[in-house]
Length: 197
Image (tube, rainbow, N blue to C red; front, side, top):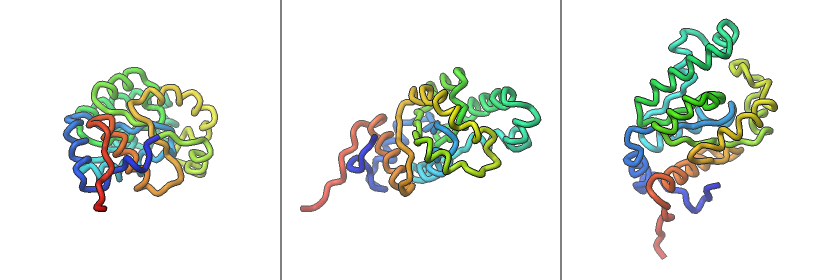
């Protein structure tokens, strides 16, 4: 896990170095529903000065219906096929921070595209945190299968380029860790800011 000593302060130049190193690639956030991909992704994008895109929102726009409706009327297989197409299109529109649905990377072709056109970050969260965050959410069709899905998906999430622990800390703390992890991966180790003695 990335420690606080490696975090960058806004405006130290690390963010622009990350964006320069990304080129046209996207920062792709993966992980279970409730891991914070959308809430942390928005803040990360703002910090980096690039756009944020939520794949689920784009899928709903493309389908003209909500994700629960897609699941109930068309089934999970058709949802996954549409999801793969939308993510492939979005990956051509980088740089951006792209939040993916919890099952998106279970598709081998989607994983390969993310590997080619992005830097993947697994927002890893413990089961109790995920359950607490997704309780009573009617817009999450698979939330009631969390205990079953997590052990199936974690080995695939673990193939991500980076892993940052999502936990009950202020968003800015986790975003700082995301920035530090990206900086370390893309532009080398980030030295802590110097202070006057």
